[in-house]
Length: 104
Length: 304
Image 1 (cartoon, one colour):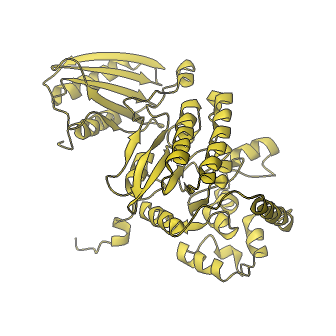
Image 2: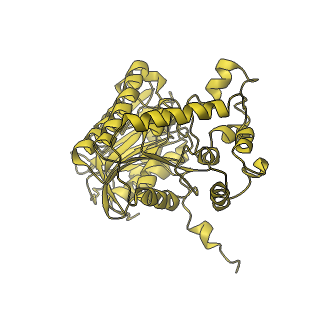
C-alpha cells in the first residue's frame, strides 16, 4: 500500500450536506469521501492505494480535476484498489456532484 | 429508431449487480434510511492497515434505521465488492451493535442484506469471534420478538459463518442468483479434490447452493426475481402478519428431527438434480431453465 498526500489551491465550493461518499473499494475501483476542509481556497487529498509507484499519475489526475472544478474548502480521502486514471476522474466527478447536491 | 422499449427491462434494478448502498436505497422506503456510523466518522479496519491493504471507510457494511412499507426497521447491508463481504472485527462489531439495538428498540424487523463469503481471513480470530457474536445477537433479537430477515442475492452469496447466520434468521429471501451454503465451492474443491466438487462447474454450484435449490428444499421462505423491488416485496410479504415466536425447546427438537430425517433422505446424493427428483419434481432438468413464477407454481404442486 502507498499513502499519498496532495494540496491544491482551487475556487471555493459550497457543500449541499456534510459529506459525500462515492464508489466501493473493490477490484479496479475506489471510494472517495469528500468533507468540508479548513481552508476555503484549498483542497487537500489523502490517497491510500494498493498499487505502489503511481504517485505522479495520481498527482496529474487530481490536479487536472482541481483545475476543472471549484473544489476549494474540501478534504478528499480516497481508498483505492487499483482503479485506472479514467475511473478515478469519473468517481471524482461523481463524488463532487453528490457533495454539491447533484449540480454536476 | 422506433424500436419499442421493453418496460420490464428498463424498470428492473438488478440486486445482484448493485452495491450495498444502492440496495439500501432501493429496497427500503425512499429517503427513509439514516446511517449509523457513516463513513465520515467510522474507522477503517486497523488489521488491514497493518497488512498494508487499503481499508474501506465503512469496513464493508452499512447499518442504520429505515422504514419498510411505513414500518420502522433496522438495516444491515454487507458490501460484497469489498473483500468479498467478509466479516472482520469492525464489520462484525457494527452488525452486533445493530442487532443488540434491535433487541432493545424492538423495530418491526431487522432487514439483513447478506453478501459475504464468511470470516475475513486477514483478521483471523477477531473475525471468527465476530461471527459467533453475530449468531448470538441474531438469536437474542429474535428472542426479544424482532423478526430478522436475511436477503440473499448478492455476488458473494452467503457462505461460511454467514451461511450459518443466515439460517439462524427468522426467514431467508433469495433470488435464483443468490447462493447459500457452508463451505464455499472453492474451499470444498481445495480440501476434498475436484472429484468431490468441481468449483468451476457453475451450473453444478448453483444446483447445490443456488436460490432455486434452496427454495425447493425449503431453506428459503421466498424466491424472488433478481430485482431490488422483488426483494422489497418479498420482505413485505414475509413480514405481513408475522409475529416472531418465542424460543421453545419443543420447536427446536422438531426442527432438529426434520433436518436429521432430511439428511438421511438425501444421503449420498451428489447433485441438486437427484434431490429434486427425490422431492417429486417430474422433470428435474427443467428446474434450471424455468422462470421464477413457474418454479413457485411447481413447488406448490409437489407432494408434501
